[in-house]
Amino acid sequence: MAFSSGGSKGPMADINVTPLVDVMLVLLIIFIVTAPIMTYPIDVALPQRVINPPPQLREPPPPIDLRIDADGSVYWNNSPINVRDLQPRMVEEVQRDPGNQPELRIDANDDAQYQVMAKVLAAAKNAQMLKIGFVQ
Image 1 (cartoon, rainbow, N blue to C red):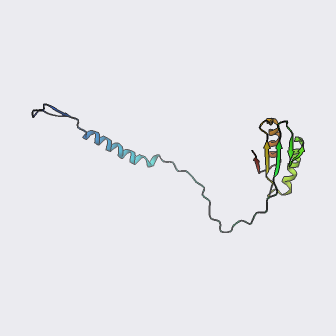
Image 2 (cartoon, one colour):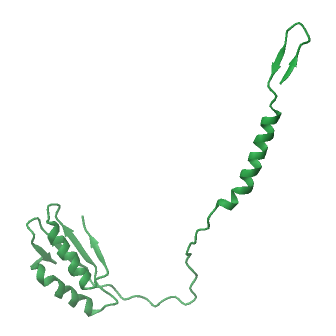
Image 3 (spheres, rainbow, N blue to C red):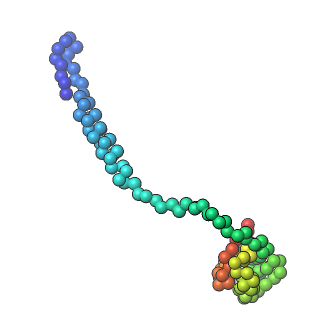
C-alpha cells in the first residue's frame, strides 16, 4: 500500500491493484492454454454421397389396423380375432414379403389391460414384424 503523508488532506490510503492484475493475467493465460486440452472429440457419422442411388422401393402393402378394446377384445382390420391367433397371422403377413412388410398400427383403448397389450407386442416381436406403430 502506498501511504502519503503530505498535504493538508491527511494520509492517503490507496490499494495497489498491480499484483491483482498480474494474478488475473496469469490465471487467464492458464485457462487459455488448458481449455483446448479439456475438450473431448465426438464422433459424428455424417451421411456420405452415394454415386449410384438405390433402386426404387416397391409400394408398401396396406397397413394392418389392430384395435384393443377395454374389455380385452382384439380386432384385426375391424374383424375380431383371438389373441392366440395373432402370431400365426402376423407370421403369415411377414412371410408374404419379408423385405416389404406391412405396418402394424396398434390402437389401444386407454382402459385396455396391460396383459393383452403385452401379448400383442410379444406376438409381433416373435413374428419378426419390423414396422410397429401406435395410434392415439
